[in-house]
Image (cartoon, rainbow, N blue to C red; front, side, top):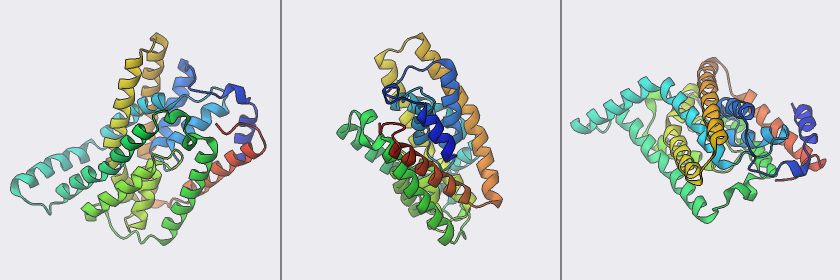
Amino acid sequence: MIALLEALLAQTPAADVAGPAQINLVQAIVLGIVQGLTEFLPISSSAHLKVVPIALGWGDPGVAYTAVIQLGSIVAVLWYFWKDLTNITFGAVDALVRRDYKSQEFRIALGIVLGTIPIVFFGLLIKALVPDFDKSPLRSLASIAIASIVMSLLLAIAEKTGRRSRPFEKLTVPDGILMGLAEAIALIPGCSRSGSTLTAGLFMGLERPAAARFSFLLGIPAITLAGLVELKGALGEGIGGAGVAAFIVGTISAFVFSYLSIAWLMKFLQTQNTWVFVWYRLAFGVAILTALAGGAVNNI
């Protein structure tokens, strides 16, 4: 993997990687595939959506485009977990009516609501303090590589030390808050929203499938808000016909591959551990740093 990424990066002149770049339909399909395969796996979609197009010589697609095609991912997770969502929603409403605040559905719903607050708060704070986030040092390749390596090590520790004794039914409101704080870390590109929450869940003693399942449910509000805000911004700036087509094609592609990745990961974690993601993230980060050190690409 390291050799392949270095070879791809070596073909990309520094002058060709300034973004955001114009996106054609083929590129939109590929970016949708990358978004779909990486949004819910603990390997960081934001990192891959920056590194992959740069490696292919397309340039950085920018925050707005990558946030909008996340809408395909949100439709996929809504579809996959629709039964869970309806049960939690109606169960929480019923618990409120009956004042049964110890109800499992109420606890999970409240955990999702409170857990969403940190990423919304810090997201708005970053947007206010760093309006030109596309060019922020946090989105540089070096930052992404370091974040990937650090998060791989944290996931390794969580996998090694986590008790994995609590099922989904034993989730508590504090679990939601703590995983929400972990989710906010993913505002740093390369950290991975699903990766940070899955890692937190393992540290808190949740079973792997339970941690992943709640991670997906917790991510619904955050991914939806990000996509809608950036969609409004993109439409407000006025995008041409080709731009609209690229958004639509990328979103559909992201939906298809997001659904497939969710289904695969949920089945995978029933019987397997997370070491494959630890090693992948470590190799991914080292590959980027190696390419940067060799001068194959600028630290953009």
